[in-house]
Length: 139
Ligand code: ZN
Image (cartoon, rainbow, N blue to C red; front, side, top):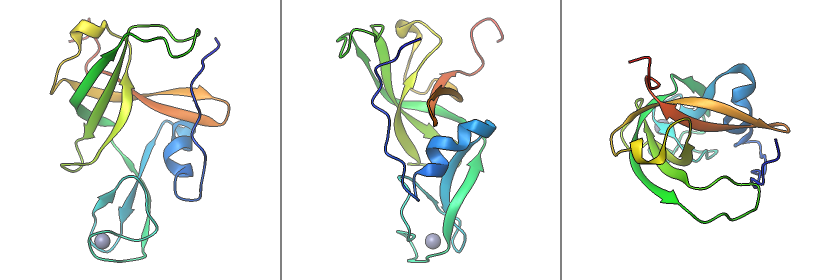
């Protein structure tokens, strides 16, 4: 399968996020002093200024906070339409990032829909995408 996704650049801070999927884990930076989850990752806690921050695994569940259906094929390999969503993780209000909702029809996606992470490997990157939780048919 050829995908035209633009792969993220790995840095010391972002590597855990983009490669945790190799172990089936979604890894998010967390301050060890005040336990605040931090995303995107930064080398210092934005709440308490602690430098004791590092990646921890989250459970991989969340909900759709916002989404849009993209009908534009930005590259010929991309199937359209597809869903671009902001998913908020259950660990902390506001802990959210841009991703795609996959594995269901675009008109099934709704605000607040529960989702769980699935990983899509591209080279040495494991993109965290989300699917309905539970998937259709398993409810
Ligand atoms: Zn902190």
